[in-house]
Length: 486
Image (tube, rainbow, N blue to C red):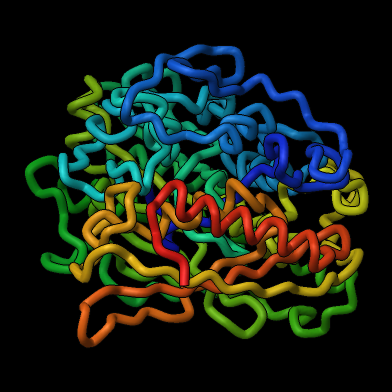
């Protein structure tokens, strides 16, 4: 389910950049003589190869080699990696045979799988080339794990499932956003034709009794169903069914919180952090929410380090999804969570670029061994920042609407700037921020100024090297977007 409480989920990106760019980590690039990582994902004229599979390209193709080279990394499968540890930790709360775990699904999917099967309108911004990486007009790199949802419902292999995967979206550059990140979604279903007497509510309550108990303090002040804020799907479900499914959903996900934050608390105590060393029970609260694919719906928040943190989104699955998937007698719940967000909290990792590091000083700090406790990340150095600005004129004074690659205001989209900076600087760019937006009072021409923060996580970045990267960014902006530099 595309049910991430934070809306736009955290992104993580790979640093295996092509010639002239810098890799994330001590190895992986050849900017200053370092050996380049050999990727099985490439881009050549009229075709793209993604991890051994070849696809034709067309005028919709916008996936750069920097993104293609990341596909084989699969951080959620790398042993002893924080993303993989987090995935395994959450999966452990959804045991087989009730739940089947799908975490090896290939990232290239059809537009029908990614958008049409979920009812995305034709004009939805998520379909735009400014938001999504297209392989060709009919094929994309999945933007969410929900691209596999209808197929999983249709296969009907288990009463429940989780889907974990790397997903791809064009977006901003900062310490919590990158174009590749990892999601997990899960679902639990009951079949009216299979439960005793067709009584779904009774079956759900019986299943709930088998779930582990906890001593968390739970705030849940709102009714399960509200006719306006959180409506019942009255044409498909009755109140008793939804009350039971909601209770099972909430107890299941509260168990996930216990698993994650108990270990996070242990790691904090081991690191000497007294702010979370209290023996008071964990606190969570349920917030009414809206998601396109569930109703009623909720967000789950956790009180952690003196603040309420959004953790995940969830709800009762829209029955149309089951009907369209060929399993109309099923009903149930679903949730979605960003693995980077959980991992950053669990391991106290401050910058999302670190997940893609191949530096042993980072990777050696983590272990998935059951005999070893979760440990907080210990920074191995703090290297200085190097800020540089780039300002340019757009070619018209109209309001920017996005969707193009040229720099008139109608076509301009900020994600295109981010892609150019990312393609040049890779993981040497910490963040990019718009610092000035000016429209000339006489000519109506629009000027933008972006501040780029160049900083390596693993070494001191020399000013000369940053200058070289920045000049390349400036020339690429002119070449690719037709801007007039200031």
